[in-house]
Length: 340
Image 1 (cartoon, rainbow, N blue to C red):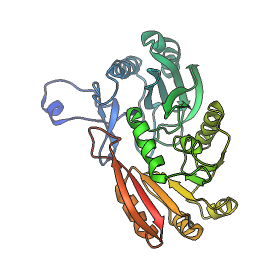
Image 2: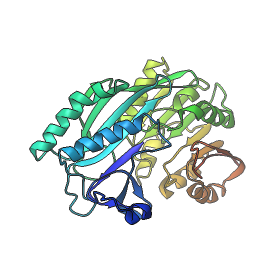
Image 3: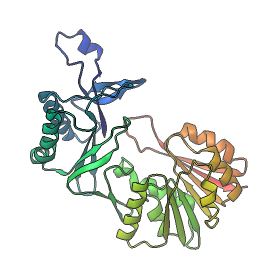
Image 4: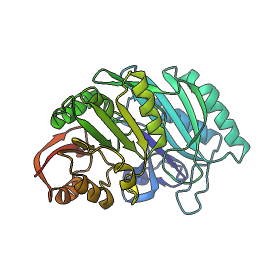
């Protein structure tokens, strides 16, 4: 769960109509749709591990007690507290928490950080990792790590393969469904031991590593250097050697320079972000002409847009929806394409 701090709290109608006095200058919770600067203060999030509510409420109370400034989500970006992320391993039942702030300016901010570093884990022993990171640029919950107490990574398992996940590496949120999800991708790809595979937008290798056990060679490409670092570490951890990983921007006009150096794949696996594929990449895929494409997407709208272009050269065989996001309308879709 990614929570945001804000100096501009959104009040519900019930809160506005109540007789209670509400602190409008402090919120720790989730953004209101369509209101980038407004955050709903959340005390009881029902879609996360319910024990985590005590953690976020403790963080909030301490920050208010010390009068620590939450960020102003405007052009100035004044403030100290920016984001708070909680990550949990289903395999080990361990939790990592990550606090994102701007630079320390005032004494009370220093006192808050010292409390966070030295006291929070004593209050919540299941927190196996306490992370503090700096971000002076944008509102995204990532930053340059300043401090880690406890474990540097969480460990999760997919299809018998262990993954070490660092604080800011992307990993699918629904661990319970991962074996089903990744297993479907592999089944749709119908991989042979002689096949050569490209896994584009490979992240930490959640698809790449299980695929490598089924084929001759895999090439994984990802923009995030930390994710590639984790992917290489995970391959080594699991004694998988038939993978080459590259850090590169798949939306760049220069991406053909890298892809042209690689052998043409028998199967191409795509798992882009919600924005989908860039035209530069689509054009190159149509030139490369892999026999089969497996297009994985968490946004069917951009996926269908891209499939219109890809089906100039490919037949769309099947689309398989997978429910990765319970209690929401979001789904993952796995599309199977074969060259005409």
